[in-house]
Amino acid sequence: MEQEGDSLKKRREIAFCTLHPDSNQAGSAAGMLLEMEGIVHATALNDATLEVHYHLLVITLADIELLLESKGFHLDNRLVYKIKRALYHYTEETQRANMGCARGESNCTQKVFANNYRKREHGCQDDRPEHWRRYL
Figure 1 (spheres, helix red, strand yellow):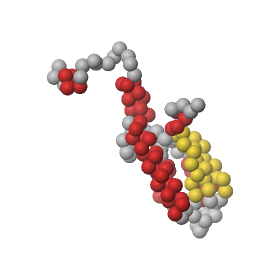
Figure 2: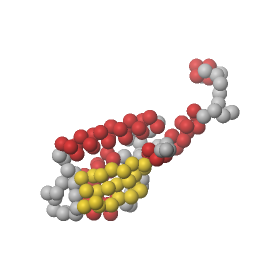
Figure 3: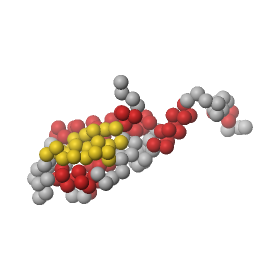
Figure 4: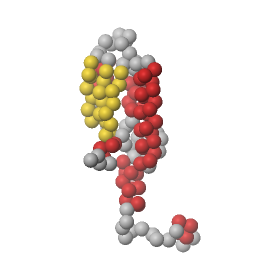
């Protein structure tokens, strides 16, 4: 049975273009990504494919790819990879939005726990409707 925390840990494969001066882009990228916050594990499956495990509330695939491209790595832009990336970006953005993370927010773990606390039944909640609380 999958727990809620398990769905926030993502495993993705990032494919690199083989026409690059660095023939082992995946290995170079793995070494760089391991130092980043939110990256749990990064290994090169081969010279052009990187497997990365990360925590969604800290970093997204779009953030990782943007960082790699800014450092000079070339991602594989064949149609199948573009479609996969677009689907992953959409689902991760939607999942983060459903958890209460605004777009562009780097670390929203505290907001998620605060939202879960507000939704729970406990003695610290105000039973009055929202519009009454503003007047009193």
